[in-house]
Amino acid sequence: MLKLMFAGAVAAGATTAAFAQMADQTAPASDASAPVASTGMASDAPSWAGIYAGLHGGYGFDNGRKISNVGSTPNNAVALSSGIRTSELGQNRSGALGGGQLGYNFQRGKLIFGGEGDFSYMDSRGTSVYRGLGVTGVAAPGRRTLVKSQLDWMGSVRARAGYALSDQGFVYATGGYAFGKVKGRAEFDGDSDSTVNYAGSHKYTAQGWIGGLGGEFRPFNQGVWRKISFGAEATYYDLGKSSIYALQTGTQPGFYRLGVATRGYNGVVKINYHF
Image (cartoon, rainbow, N blue to C red; front, side):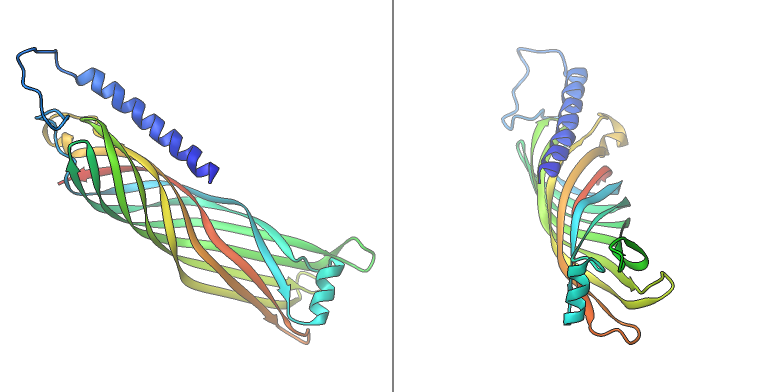
């Protein structure tokens, strides 16, 4: 969670600096006779309220994840305790992502709130390999345990609530429902990499939650360009935990069950058009 807080703080800090610079550059000369807007926002400033749509791109990662491994028979348990197999594998999964979003904002003075739905194609992959011990107590040529995981795409439906730092930008918190296509495969080799004693895979749509922080700003003040905004967002998601069952492919008894969690961090930059 510290990674999310750090990423969100960086995104919010960068956006806040941009807001301040824009405000300094565009602030009109003071006029004592000019009326003061009761909402706290400039009366001629474009509102954030309404429908918007746009594109995003970025990167996601899940480092330091642990995959558990449990055998179904006494022979499997011996293999795990003796080092032929392992009861836990570490895995790092990461990759690029890109997609689009559609949302609606309400605005009350400096308070901005609403909802957003997004969808991202992802190339998030991870691979774990364990070389089991042979009869001499050293790594054997075969006896490899291989586990692959993949997140092909992800979508979310989220609420957003924020605060305008200037006429041209705001920061916000977001959270809601998330879902994605998860794939995984496991292979347990025999005495050589060409012999597979156990194998299994799964593919399904996982469901869970997502939350994060972000910021959005409008660098332009006139014409159609004032409808364009840019933003940055950092989120953490958790799509739950599932199992891969590696079943026997020959005469080997039993099976292995691997517990794989699908969770991680995404960081994106955005461009939106406000209708």
